[in-house]
Image 1 (cartoon, rainbow, N blue to C red):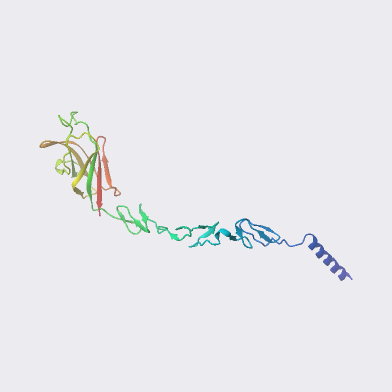
Image 2: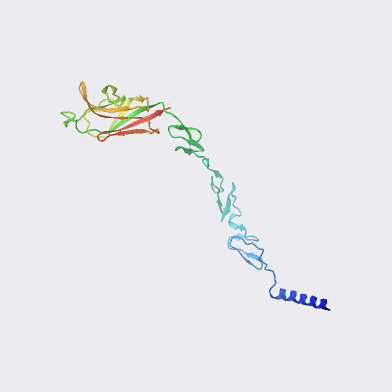
Length: 250
């Protein structure tokens, strides 16, 4: 009898549970995607999505995305290194690391002057340089005694270049420019001048030519190679300045 009462009690409890609050949530295991809302176990998809879980992007149904890319709203989202409508274009310079100021061009490093190697990591040592042009940026207006360089006009200038820290007119490397009154003054060297001993002092000097003689106007000594290989070397003092255009030889 007691067993019968227990069975009756359990049956009534199960019936009441189903009628009142013990029904299983039909959306509990329904994982709607892309912002969809579950109602009575079914996903209510927002506009542009379909499928049982709203997992299908309708704009991506006919879109083919390549190379591991994914489609979002009809547009392929490309992984790094790829581009194009379908991510079909590989950037040949992706993951190419050019050092020392090198730049990548179609998958290969273009190295600056003085460097070589696949990634421009190999430093070259210059054996000489070639001077192709010299610009005179400035020079003293008057001689050290305060008089004009030329009695009847402006100075007639040429340039010398000598090894060491002392200028000498015998190192003349340019022709004479007459009655100079505007700056900068450009000399194109023909023939060019090759310079070795790149770690030693060289002196660039300026002279005013006066017939068979010449007057020293001033000079600056410098070391051609410092730490890099520029296209031009600038040397200057308080009253004089030059830009020396060079090519480096390795």
